[in-house]
Image (cartoon, rainbow, N blue to C red):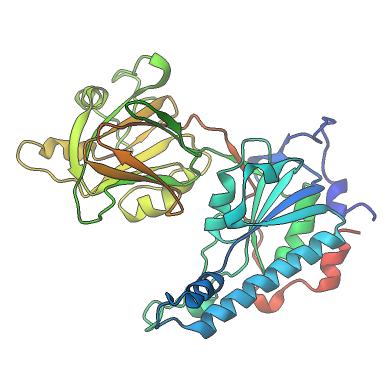
Length: 394
């Protein structure tokens, strides 16, 4: 194989890993790594595969639209086959694993993880990565423009792919260039949660998007005590250091009284609590009333869901949401008999018991995530021809 044109434009730092060097593109600082030659490909399980298993057990819903599920499955499998074909042409060593079977041992000797599916597959893969191995997401079944209409009787929308670098439509052009280091990853801040029970301490997987605290029964009240303070025993900033102090969602700093209240802690009755990173700030927490943060921000945002107040607790409403910088940690003491923490969605869940304390901070390894291509993507009917993809690896 010859040298990819993208490789000739990549500056090497001379390290053993063909190291990380800072590059500037459009005023942005990005990490340049590669070339990548030992890949792990993580492949999602489609709804069709899942429901087919349920059908064999007699548990599949009767109203399933099997033809549509089969079509989505075929689109996904076609993308997976194209990815494998592209990697073979590029002459890289790769192995694949199903998303549900992924384990840390699969990462041994790998220098890049490629997640084929959607945001859920990217999130699941991120839980096993530290700050050494980059992650690239490929949206294998993106929503078409004709499927975005929400007034139809059936919801036709597919994967959003907000965390994916490319889609099935432009993968054959994007992937070879990424393998040669042209599209470098960005560092993304993550959330670290540690559960301290009566006799145990559990460190959860780092969350790229968000954490949800709630009662296992959605209609039940979630009771917890919330406080925030500077990490590591550092002094909390006073009112004259507003740039370092926690802020409300509208950007105004907490008052000295609110800072004092946050440091002491306050009891809440609500529907639960969202805590999100900057990456997750445009997800569920924004739909609940939060604000988007710059994607490279190291802050975390919290939002109490449907806070219950009366005449004696109305003052807590101003404390129901806020943004804490990386010097702070959030402590949740669970006061309900039962509870749950959901890490980046519904697949990773940990139980909570009365009296458990959960400390949340951004003191987690950064994730190296390849961001979406800045160029306008081709439509499905304008996919890169096969010979164009091949030349990128010659």
